[in-house]
Length: 87
Image 1 (cartoon, rainbow, N blue to C red):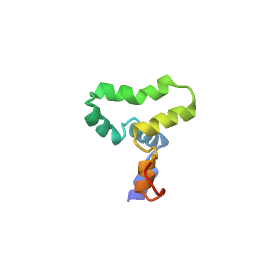
Image 2: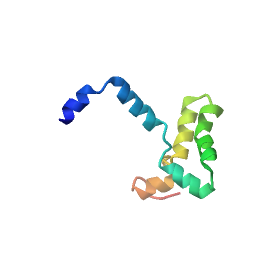
Image 3: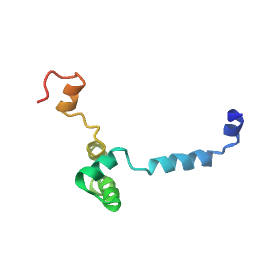
């Protein structure tokens, strides 16, 4: 039954699903909102800044990694056992 439902879906249904998920803020947004006491509007502006401020793609990627806390600092590398010290 599930397969027949999936076969009836058109590509525009999947596109809408993809876009709706893409437009959501990351899970780390709640942490940023709490830590810096940001409003919803301010939080959206924070995530739009890398697109507006810089033109280089690697700088944008670096800024997004910082925003969503996936930048591997020495402390994180030490925590997962990749380095011998956290400094």
